[in-house]
Length: 363
Image (cartoon, rainbow, N blue to C red; front, side, top):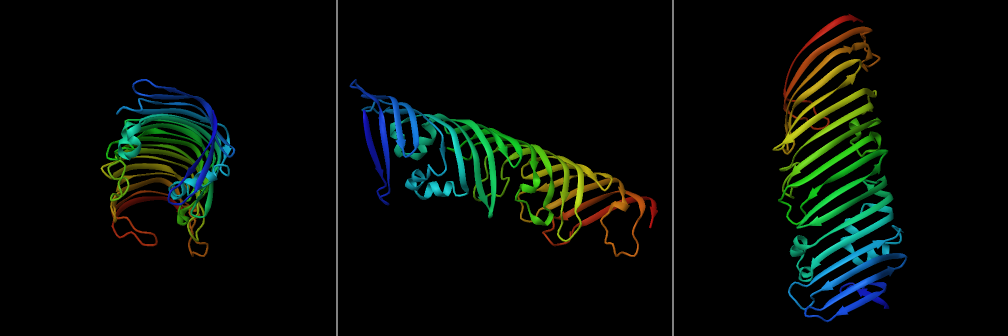
């Protein structure tokens, strides 16, 4: 058959025209089945091809299944569809400004009576989707960020989305996989994120200590229920993080740049508390920071110890108009901090305890 369908929104009167072609077979058995083969659905330049069926239409267990594959289409070409679905589609994709879709495939099955019951649909629908996109552009805080490529596969069954994605963005290759219980958010989720050689200067980080140079690789693993609207991150999530940064340059406000040839660390957070260990190299000195920090408090209390060895005093970015400046010398020591974490622009008001050893000082 060959026909046309016009979808109309009852409240806004917006319409979307579809051309439909395929072979449809009606089986008048006890349950009444309809099957569709070699189906082609087209709206504008976007074409979906595949097959589907509706079974037992006169029974309580009536079901629908479909398999559809699309060819290539661009962000501009999908605009009429987004405009038809209105505000929900616009809000979900508000930050997306461009994308090219190279491949899209969807397969799904669901009971017919669940279409009018969204909670039942989440639990009883199952299926999978595969996609491949490139040249995606997002606007975040008046800045544009590009995702050069993204591809992956996701399956959903019994209210759980299992996904595996990979791609490249901001000069970094990344992967994301896990499980997301979209039907019941109180259930445990699982996420694993890994990235390589991410360009730090391209990230929307605070300007006060924003990096002007450097690459970072790392991974994050999260398990547990996602935070709800009443919880602050990480809520009931547990997890761990690892990172390795190279050739990092920080630019504090109105101060000389600070170069760290190496910075690495790992942390574990459980029940809202981050236990961390960071080490690196700065001004000729090896240093490490160990401690604990609550993540879900309005005024978190820090408990950390900083150790450093062989700090080259001649490399310190001290003001040039100081009467005495070190020409030689090394400084080693330890410093313990305990107290409220200071907000930006404020001094640390907690307790400090330290010791140091100075060698071969020349002014």
